[in-house]
Image (tube, rainbow, N blue to C red; front, side, top):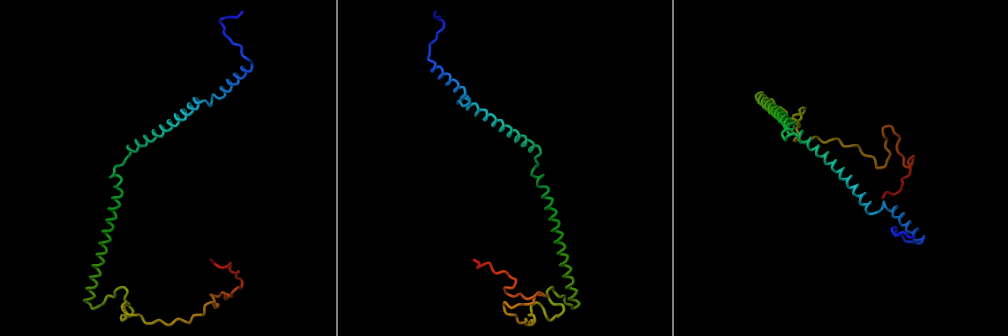
Length: 175
């Protein structure tokens, strides 16, 4: 009655239950198996590399656009050179004006020498020809006597300050 084509073994029920529990635990732990962890890591690595390639693509297109629209050194320097040229012309005009003024002053000095008139240089007194910047000024009037320190003084219509009247006491010694 035993069929030789089917091999089987009789096992105790406790052993079968234990094996079923192990199989179910292994199925649950499938997500934590080393192979699935490696697969997840490889997926993250693939995503990171894909993002890196996108960044490189953007950088490459930026570099291409920059080289297409790149200005030469001369094109960058032309506005600066134009400003320097304008500044040089303005300096030349100022120098020529200063020389023209110096010539006018010399001509005036020659004319005044011929007429025996003196041109009073800046800083010399025109009102009193005897007094010039090299001489001392006359002494000033003495100042009125000062009041002792701490005495009340009238302050342009304000009442005099009296100590501790309407003034809060000091906060304490300063350190």
